[in-house]
Length: 249
Image 1 (cartoon, rainbow, N blue to C red):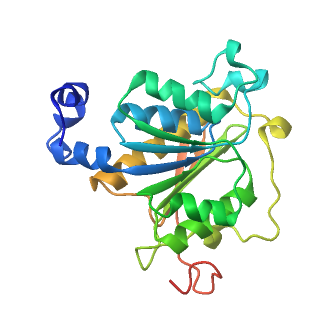
Image 2 (image 1 turned 90 degrees about the vertical axis):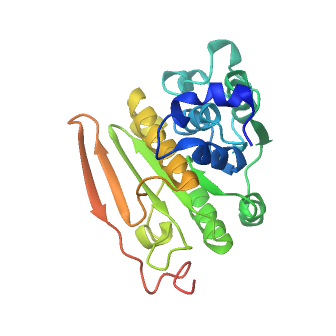
């Protein structure tokens, strides 16, 4: 149940008839895993914490660097050298002290991801490498936990939602096979600052929709953004019947 302070804090959401108190209570009961506390993870965690998600688990093994500050908006110059996940958690708590936050300051293996998503409502991939994305996808498929995956580089971004509970939903592996993909990092290719905020904000919106049951999710659809031309494209995604990760689900 929501208390009086929560009814006031989240009043602008509760006022919407399709969301209402039921949607807000669903957010309060949710447990969300955010993998990556960088350009995408910052807006995701800030918006979900501010919106009233009850529990966040923030996973990142990196520390804040000067070059991060151009786009990782939760951090300040004085915090250079501090752990990203812990610093982001403190920033979220400063916005909404009622949020329960767990911090994981290490790089997880397959078993670690499986443990973290086991009791989650959903997970968000805000990472910057394929190894992490593939491991998180496998854990989410095995646990039946929806995965909201986003990526951004240069002036281009993309995102989709994968939900193995739905029989026709593809998984991340259906879109990208594990062989033949090489990581291209922002330090190598560059990224324009607002792009990660745009993609991260859409990830947060998809999470709120999935948790509350309001609206149509991006399951089976891939959104691609060209920020320089400000054009969104949508592609249909089909489940790979021979996918080694999700075909037996």
